[in-house]
Image (cartoon, rainbow, N blue to C red):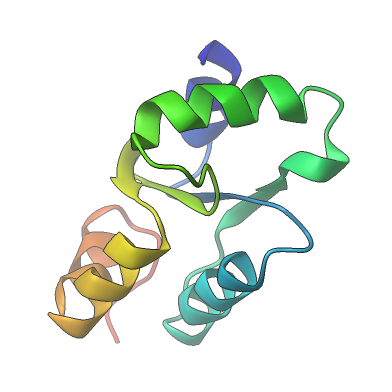
Length: 104
């Protein structure tokens, strides 16, 4: 989990993904469309990816480890959570507050 926390704290918005995951792609696209430029870590392309995936299972409490989204160094959720935040209008504000995007 230490590596996950370290990577998550290096940029305002961080998404842990797998290259073959369609929901991961959707969440990345949503962030790009909102004007964010998240750090994206594809676990299936990282030598420590399996260990990080196991750590993310613990953080998410879900059966799916990815996508796992961190904003401002804090775990904010999976795809379902992010879509919910987007629909209720709070995702953009979270990104603004963390300086992942500038006022738009």
